[in-house]
Amino acid sequence: MDDTQNVGGRDRLVRFLLAAGLSIAAVRWLQSGKRVRGALAGVGALVFGFNATTGYCGVNDALDVDTTGDGVSIEFDESDGGSASSADSAVTADAGATQVREHYLTCADCGEPIVAGQARGPNSEGDIVHDACA
Ligand SMILES: [Zn+2]
Image (cartoon, rainbow, N blue to C red):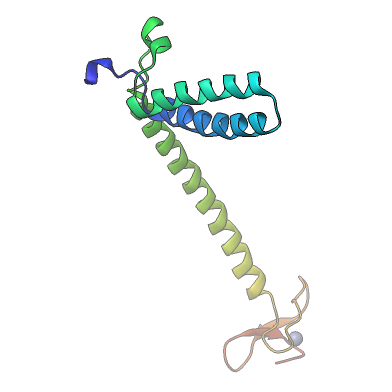
């Protein structure tokens, strides 16, 4: 049975979505009186639905295409996503560091930012405040 399957992975998912979309389109066209279009969409839905459920496509067979190995490319996608999300977390970490730094430069007493050049220092609790606030 495996030998007859040539639709897999993303190809199968795409065909399933096409089948679902064409089914909706077929119903709408048939309801609005567009029978030829509705019938064609219905046939398409059946064909793609057949491909998706059985994992076999006559066109793929004729073209010697086999997408059952798509799992490999999906794994590549996952590793891409992993590196992307680690880059995201690096950005987040930078943003966090910036926030900490901004917080550090905020007067713990009056809450106003301590601008460069303003006299500042730790108060009795060790928080950085304006000299005027300490
Ligand atoms: Zn202050």
